[in-house]
Image 1 (spheres, one colour):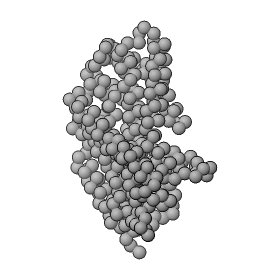
Image 2 (spheres, one colour):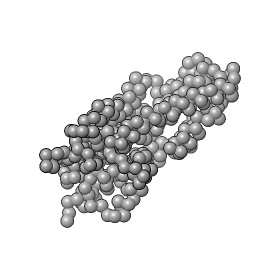
Image 3 (cartoon, one colour):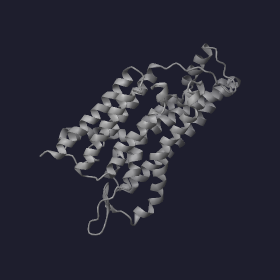
Image 4 (cartoon, helix red, strand yellow):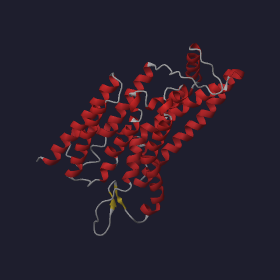
Length: 335
């Protein structure tokens, strides 16, 4: 939480936006009412690193579920390594160690994860208005509507970037709610927490919330990004569009501007949907292995990334996941 607030405050500080406005002024662009110009802001070294960091975190989030999602006899060293990656899944209840102080179950963790995006949006909104007030005081009468638009785009992009990062664990938790075991003495239990029964009691009480989370997160977030990009596909070089949505497509070829949406769907399948496919069986591991092979081949055929380190990292990450699951298939089938 402290790291998130530090990143948020740093992202919204005055001098970040001042440098952006100064850059536009140097290029002869006035901060008028609309602020629309066919000018693509210069990408800094930090921006390039953030694109590669997004690829790396996505890779880690997929790898980190290879222990909990499948019944594979992984070596102890690999299991320890995977558990070290758990912070990237943003399960704050588990990471905090609160279970040592109070007892909680799947429903408590589920509610925390479902409410996480609302908390993030709330914190960003409050910080946005505080920063906006600071900008107005700092710039006085020179604070134009165009400057406010640039600042707003800056904040919205940060919020969407965070939502993009927490999407895989968020979707997985929403899907895990429906991962119930086969009937044991006439009762089905949550695979994630066998202390709770499915289709009765608290499971039924939380069902409306789980259905809302299922629609809003696994399907709603990719749909939102897809609609926003598709409706602006003819204006992707517009300065306002770049400053708000550019982080979603500027790492890809012009024709592959929806690739991040595809990446969200891929991560949702590999970390969430896969847990519902005959859980605990060799067939589940085989499906995961073949799916990763398909995703790797599709990436190599489409080559959506611009040439450079980002493309190399994406290919290496996809091949690494495929090899890991292939080894897992061997361990699950060979005595």
